[in-house]
Amino acid sequence: MDYKSTLMWKELNEAKDVLKTLRERNAGVLQSVAAAAEKAGVANVYTAARGTSDHAMIFLKYLIEGRLGIPVASGAPSAVTMYGAKMKFSNALVIGCSQSGKAADVMEIVRAGNESGAITVAITNDEQSPLAKLAQYHLYCNAGEEKSVAATKTFSSQLYLSLLLADALGAGIGADGIGELLEKSSPAVDAATDGMAKEFIGAEECFLLGRGVSSALAFECGLKLQETCYIRARAYHSSDFYHGPMAMVGKGTKVILFASRHSLNAATDEVHREDYVKCARKMEELGADLFIVTDDADSFRGMNAHVELIPGGKTEAETAFCFALAAQMLACKVSCGKGLSPDEPRALKKVTITK
Image 1 (cartoon, rainbow, N blue to C red):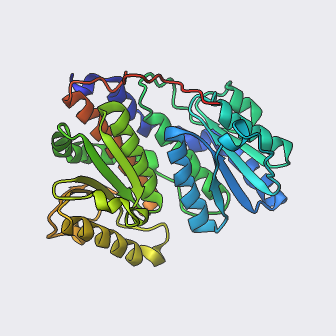
Image 2: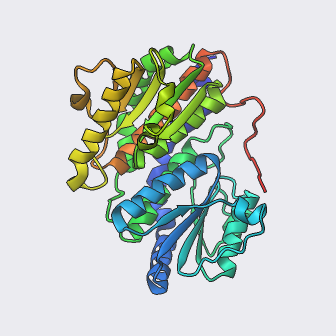
Image 3: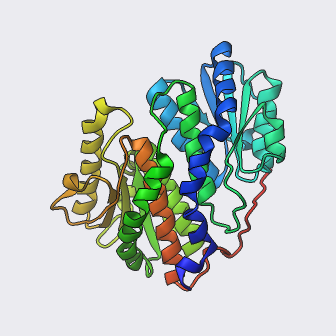
């Protein structure tokens, strides 16, 4: 199958245009959420999501904690739906994220937030969805219908709404020009993933690593390789990987490291860079077949690794959108190279409802 004929390829390439609409489309809601949070003295944030949507919430977690110092908990909806817990969400901002807006367990968390006095926000791609109507505020992905089972443009929309929300709360990261960044970066990302895809067509397993903001993209890339390529792809925070899982890496083990040039904060750029270089050198030492997806080729020069250079932004948050595009393009190409359809993975459907 020609990957360029798939719905997944078509839709991932629509993301750049979708992102250009989101700031204006959601401006009023963002202002209202920020005002409500300030008035309530929000002291913590609680997110509820599944799958790809949860990876967008990992991204949001690092934006808010890294720039505002407000604790963000990635919630366990099962605490409510399986154990009947009565959650206490006073002084909290509760965010439910679901592409379809039909995730029943996510809705239960938002409902619990409403009942306990929290500020509740839904992030969905359907304004008329149950989750959108349940929350006090709704941030709209405005991505149009997404037909491929693999979420691409909706994920990019969730990332951008997360960035806009963090900035509305005072993070001061800057969210201008992301759609334009993707538009300019797309040809280079496409080229970088061509050779990489050929190396993964025969792969049965791999590890994906990132830290902080970039870990969200490692998790999302792992999921995309699992669901569209049937590769046993396992993603880790690179810092967690040292605590046991690294023992599985040996000669020829495929590892993908997402490593951005910049941190969220300019003051920590060097610490950020040193951490990624340390991780790459350790993988090199273990004999891994290492692929480094980065906008910082200089830091990895001379290493025994495949350095896949892609464009980046002024901060790690901006570069994340290029990483997301790389993950999506890679999975689409590998899937088609294996003779599979990324649009219709076995045993999966577009909307998955868990309770």
